Length: 320
Image (cartoon, rainbow, N blue to C red; front, top):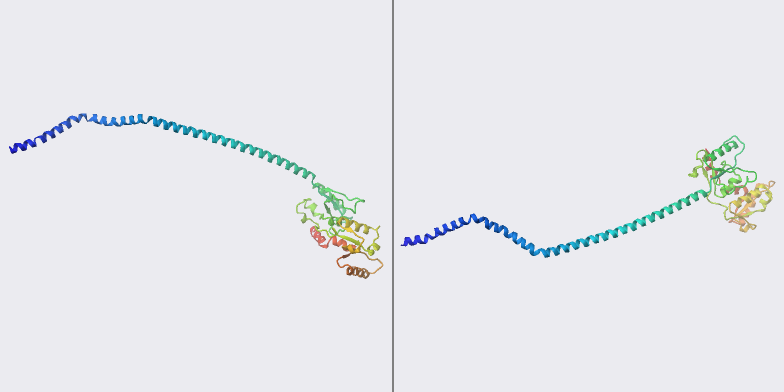
């Protein structure tokens, strides 16, 4: 009985195992069904979730759509503002360009008018004589023709104005040693004394004038008072050419005459042809002792004061 009991207790296990196997085996053909159920379950869940989340999704999408539309409108407004600003900038640029163009036209017209009204280069000759050297009248004629080709106005000397330099003269062509009134007046007024090479080599160009000519920027007689001493008047009365030249030279140099020797900056003295030079020297020393601040000069010394020797030397070097 013990064995049977053992068998009885042991038998169910195989049967259950068999039954379990058989049931599992029986259900194995239907295993596809649970798999379908398992597969379909997520679908239903997802479908359910989709159905349950549709209102929220729709609201979210609508909210997102509103945001997108708002962003689009804002972008359009920004673009419109940018377009308006760009249009305003373009209008400003156009107006500014028109203004610049008008100013350019005005400046050009002003420049044209100033160029048109600019003083022309007017030259004259002085000191050329009937000689056979490079400062003869034949050379002067050749230089005149050459200057006219270079668009320069040449003003010829006349008998009436041979000792007077007109105001329209800008340059004067003269030999280095010339001490004519025109040369002295030109130097006294700060105008250029040009060499002949200014015409032949410089082609009358206004650039680098210092290479072909000289001028004196300081004016030694300007604002000064000149006293004509009795010795000068005795040697050169008022009707003489020297007296007239002295008067013209002082006036061209912006000086003035005075009748009071104590007010004078320059005292012009003269000598008598019948008297010795020592007497003139003594007179000059006496005036200098009485008026130590005054410069006592003879007529020749006054000419040298206006046309100093260093300018002549410079002009000589240019003519070589």
